[in-house]
Length: 274
Image (cartoon, rainbow, N blue to C red; front, side, top):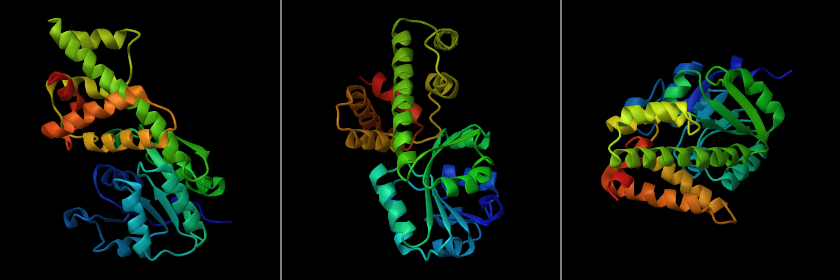
């Protein structure tokens, strides 16, 4: 019987907000990042790959994930868990290429921010072989409130794009609603409270409402990252996505205003500046 991934040495490639949170929650012993100040017990990426049975990739996109894996010294039986929100077709191709080398690949996208992950309050959507998914379930449950297998490699990325489409539009709608309330001379704190009690409620009000009102854009998840996701959605769709097209324009405007590295709640600045 193959060992449960929970009992094997884990490492992290990409020690940004999500990678650092994963290290804390999983107990991974090694982490590498292009920023040397973030590295933990690893001077190079190979230090992580060579010493870890399970390696989490927490990278900006699938192109970077591919470049890291291309240069890595992987071994048969190793498990790669890619949490990057990337191109679904690219991630499916990565899975096939690694399988040919005897390496297991799961695209395990996370619905929720790094702050929510630290609170054990994220959903993980996993694409890949069911048997490998089952071996990793206990490891996922160290940081997730729920984990679901959604199909073959690439399916986790597809599901993340769908959930992020709705999530992002909820965030943009909240921003527009608060700006509208401000134009009507309503108290924004009271407005947010009323919306939470109404049929308009969404969980995004709990995580982003106060940030929009106070304009505290300390990043939980960067605006430029969501813009990247919206572009992936539009590229992956064979039909027009009119709301997402408008959302892309708002995010591009916010980025042009200098809020690309700010929290994605800064989308409200694009509406305020209209």
